[in-house]
Amino acid sequence: MIKSEICIAGILAFSVLPAAQAENWPEWRGASGTGAAEGESYPTHFSNSDGVLWKQTLPGRGSSTPVVWADRIFLTADVDGISTVVCYHESGKKLWERALGSGAGGKHRASSGSNPSPVTDGERVYVYFHSGALAAFDLKGKEVWAQNLQETYGPAELNFDVGTSPVLIRDGVMIAVMHKGESYLAAFDRSDGRERWKSSREFDASGESNDAYTTPFVVRDGETESLLTWGADHLAAFDAETGRSLWSCGGFNPEGKQNWRTIASAVVAEGIALVPYGRGDFLAGVAVDGTGDVTASSKRWVREDVGADVPTPVVFDGRAYLLRDRGALHCLDIQTGKDHWTARLPKHRERYFASPLLAGDRIYCARLDGVVMVGRVSGVGFELSAENDLTEPIVASPIAVNGRLLIRGDKTLYCIGPK
Image (cartoon, rainbow, N blue to C red; front, side, top):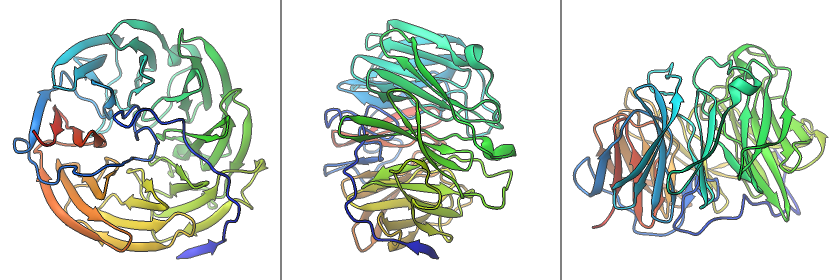
């Protein structure tokens, strides 16, 4: 049920980092950080052979989502136990492959040591691994700098594998480390990897509830950038220039449960952060402003009947599209939290780990067994259009560029679209 609902007047105009060109998908959830791509004529029907422009056998396993800049595609993989960066041309030709030393293998059956997705600014691509390796390469594959955060700051104390992806801030690249050890945010200069700032992120959470596999969201208000972080039962914002704490919102785990680790990331639109919590059972809308402890003032609404444990929601045009792990879909109003509509994808024993993609009026939901559901969405409903079987596990989130889909399976990278 909706616990509280407060109208918002005079909301500040918030946005993410300035978007790159429309044909780029420079980070895990796209240029806007919302998982949505504008445009039309994205493919509906395909298989592991039909509708495929090209496919490439990957050199190793990984769960990272590909990113795209112009005609380059970047992803990471574990290749014979080595953390590796791979670059493909948009035609499918492999351009280069670079190793970063011994990696750390995945603990979960569907996971790997290459969960974090790359991020690129069009000059360099920045990569991060479960091993703690953080590095920058130019677009031709030359290593610009590399370091290991675990060697510098201490090991990752997580029950499972590092999942947070790096994000870009002005002139910097930032990593969030939220775990049972000392939790922190750290920003590094893009050109040489030098530490710009490091900020503690410690909250009163216990056990596995300290573990966060979420990616920060970069919020921009005019010339000011802030980093929205979700984990350890707290949504918190930090100044991107200095790392200074701005505000925090708690109250997401009032009973102090010890196993409420966070996987689905918070996502921001229209000054509201959608926060999935409680292992997929709850969802909150939180205003992304204020100072200090805003627990009592910033929650605009709370849902106790819906949430997402692993897939991060998509937001676009005032609506949020929430995919639950077992295939329930909700289209919600961002300001009120009320459902515009709900739908149910065909039942199956496998879950949805990949985050959904919205491309034009189509939503793509990739199930763990390799079936990609495609449906048309509107403000009033959902219509399932196709069930497309790629015949191999999918954990990475699909992406959309130039009317084409890029889908990373367990062994194969697919480019799907019109010839």
